[in-house]
Structure formats: structure tokens, C-alpha cells
Length: 112
Image 1 (cartoon, rainbow, N blue to C red):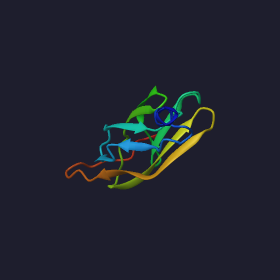
Image 2 (image 1 turned 120 degrees about the horizontal axis):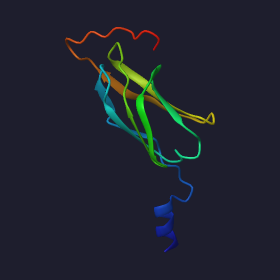
Image 3 (image 1 turned 30 degrees about the vertical axis):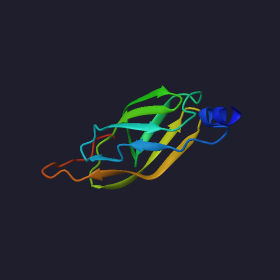
């Protein structure tokens, strides 16, 4: 019975960070789920896709954060960084791919 409790509680095994879906279009606005653990108790969180901040960041639970991806000028792969109010940071290297969207021309945001 103790083994079952360890499986349910984790017994110190850290749940890895995952990002779903792992890709989306350059215009942004894709709803992304970031799953892991320990998301509460660190204050508010900012999530960055490359150097751009995600929008509508919500800590849904101790194991789930949802965001809307920011736009990205070029197709390609970026790191995803979670930066909490208390200084805690968690990173997902090369975790999100921006796909090219033919016919879309993005210009850098002023002040962003």
C-alpha cells in the first residue's frame, strides 16, 4: 500500500515540465498548457517565448499554467522561461516551434 501512495504523491520525484502543444503559428494567440509542479507559492509568473512575454498567463493549479503565445517575427524554435515573483525560474530549452504562416507579415511591436 505504501508503494501505491508513493506513485500517487510522487515521493520526491519531480514532475518534468511539459508544454502542449509544442508548436503554433507566428501570429501567436495559441493557447498553451504548461504542466509540471510547484507553480503556486512563488508569487505571480511571467512566461517568455524567446524574448517575448506570453499573454493571459494564468496559474490554474499547482501543476498547470495556461498562456497565449506572443507573436514571433520568424519561424523557428525558442526557449520557454517561467519567471516567478520570488525570483524562481524554470526553463524549457528549445520547447516551442513557431511555424511559418504564408501571407502573414509581422512587424516588431513598438515598446514590446
